Image (cartoon, rainbow, N blue to C red; front, side):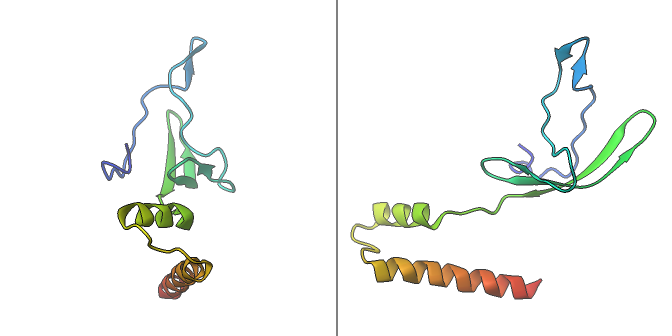
Length: 107
């Protein structure tokens, strides 16, 4: 929902557990050292501040992963006979690798 709506603020106005009843599921990482890895994204806890009546947490949500095998499968479904040989498949990996390396140099 956060990614779909491009939200930059989430407000939780309940405790996780109240009176022994779960009121909110834990949707953030517990530690700054280890992100929460979900199916379509990774959530990083960048910082947090514990105040008297509430906690402020700063997250970084990364949506990034892709699977070349799945991409090739989709391409072949759209165009019969596309990417048939090992060399063509290798070329796809090589192109993606080069693009990712270029992106890293832009940072």
